[in-house]
Length: 559
Image (spheres, one colour):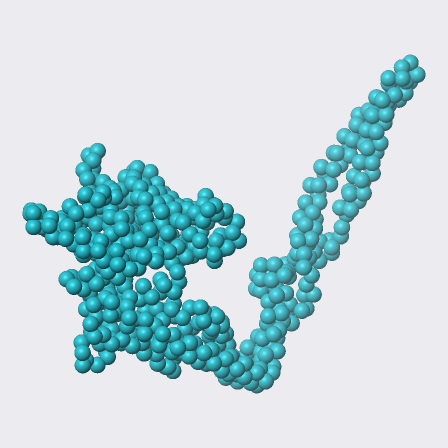
């Protein structure tokens, strides 16, 4: 579960910290106090995009840190494989944003934003303010059903996606290969010319580099020879050269060597220098002789280099690229030369892959049909607990002729909320409040299946009141018995069920406006409920109603 939230320099928050508890955590506050900023900070830490206007760059980078306590075996194994150490089941997610830079860490180890999102999926599920509106689109219905059937469906979907991609690739190849006879003959002629041009050059990898080196040497040979002649004069000349002077020095040392054994080492060093100079002179002469070449050699080198550069300009940046181009075009030429056989083989491969794709679509369809029945039964139970008195609910799964990476299924949620009314598309007849309750039911079912420890509801109470609000509050309290729930609400019925109640307030401070959050003491909870229930003036009657509502909630929770 989420133990701690630390936020710094984000929107109206200068810096604040919250310690959450297990059970139902309720967040309330006046409109505009900054309740959405709290949820926004959590989503920021989990790797979601952050609007630029939320950053307080003048005060430094925005920082959000979440501390979770978890025993999720799959997550712990995943982190261990990444080399992230977890002690006592504590996972710390932190994110710092400064300008265009974003730094994500898990237990002090730097990770990518994508990895942060993947990790967060094991820890927390967030229901945004307007997420229930997504139920108006059938695409969301397919996604929900697939999430519910994930364990059995995922391997089939993975194979289905690969098969679909293969099918698309083969279909494209068939389309591109379908040319008329004249066009095919023109392409063959061009390919034969290009391949022959490359073959005639008898290319060798690395040849161009050696030729360029030789060409530079040839074009600079006159200048090189002039320089080396001077070098030879200075080192190997007859009178004042280094070799002559070193030889004389050696003879002088030898003449006095007998007077002191200490001169032996100096003599040996000087003789070594003299020997190296002699070796240098011989190598210099060999190199200078190698500078001799004929005009024909220069011409042949230049012509060969021009040919290689011409081929590289046409077919690739390097000789290896040119040879790869030749190999690719040879395959294309072989295909055109055996066009009928190639097309028949390609068509057969496409039909086989298409059949595999259809079989995988059928497997996915059967799994969805099976899980649609199970999900329907669970949804009816959940909806009945959310004050749908005589609800009918069904998940329609229909085969279509359209194939996609998801298969060929069209999934739609059907509902009837009034006795005697036929089932109709959820998106066409459900009100905003009904959509909120349907989404709450879905979240409850999926959270039970995935065993996610923490669920956040941002104003799940949209469009509901009265008895329905009471039922929703009871449902949230029941969910809070098995996992941590964090809920932002405007309704007193829901707030009264809190195991821990937090108040979000906007205050004028240091010449500006700041959002703060604090946990309410027992005596403050009734006052906050009265504020939600009452108007501008809080009367004794409002306070009594708030006390009664809190007492009834506590009685329900003791059941």
